[in-house]
Length: 312
Length: 200
Image (cartoon, rainbow over all chains, first blue to last red; front, side, top):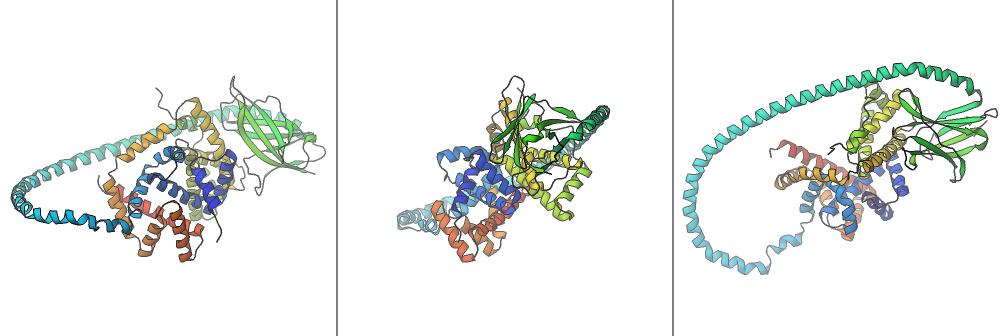
């Protein structure tokens, strides 16, 4: 049988947040493409939650796991319910009949006769009280049912209003988008015409997020007459003011660095166009790293793209 | 004091998932509609867990935002060869934005978790245990034994127990792990349904 203890350990460390970014990426890339790997991770999560509720994690792991576990209250409560079953062993039930418990049991028998007499008197009193309570309980039940009905009516009215509000918000957003698109359409067309004139010696590619080793990586085809390569990426984060780009080879050696770059607006997106002299790109695999900086802030990593250059 | 979460600021209102975009996303997952729906659910679950395991404050919302971005690209005609890898790339970028936003707003993510846990604490443990017991008894004898044995013991004893269980069932430990997890998911669903149905 294969020993999976290392993988198990790695999964556990991932779940308590004890891995490096690189190690996290390796696990995530695996479970996004392999459904069974994902299930194994879910199973490992069950174990971590179980250990958490049974106090089985180390202090450090417990601290790391605490906020994640706290976000899953039902899962934690489920683990507690399961623990009540799995922690009960035959040894526990034997304790109930152990010799140490016997003297206490005999004393209980001697006092039982007195207890029986007192209990008889109590039973008569309790019977009378029960009759009165039954009537009261019936009244309370009726009131409770009415209150629940009212609450349910209020909730459904609230839901309908929320749905309507949401619909209106979506309509306003759609209208806003249409206006924006129409107003920029002319500008974009003009830009495109101007660009088309320059593109005869330029090869362009739109880079999509892609993993190293993907079946179809981003591909940039460069023929001998091409002087410049344009790598286009779409920016999701609106806050960065300026950017810079670095191209590294398959062994992480720096091939080219840009100066400061500005994003452009195309339709409703922000796009960064990185223009690279074609001569620096030989046939092979590359990474394009984008760093961004907000106003008066230092640069930080924004995204990384993997692409392949094909020479023709 | 602001009550907005990092997720609020990251929510994109410029583009709303529409019927066409959703249909395109499903078609790119699988040509068969029913299988596509299953794959969609699995992808969304992976995204939710990704954000949850990375400590993001609103995993469900972030997963939906990732799917929105993915659908938008497809709707605009981009060809995506591997949806799983691609969605992971989109999710990672979104995570960077979330982390940056969280730092900027100086909001401790742990705060959200704790407030949610208070809600759970209000559920009566007895009621939950009753539901759990009922659901456990509703399982077949073999299944019940498997799940109880699988989760029995602690540390090394648990590991040994699982190895022995896998051997007795003639399956690998990985296969046993997945089998036990699936039973646990069924049991959890049953308990949650029971809690939702029975009065407090």
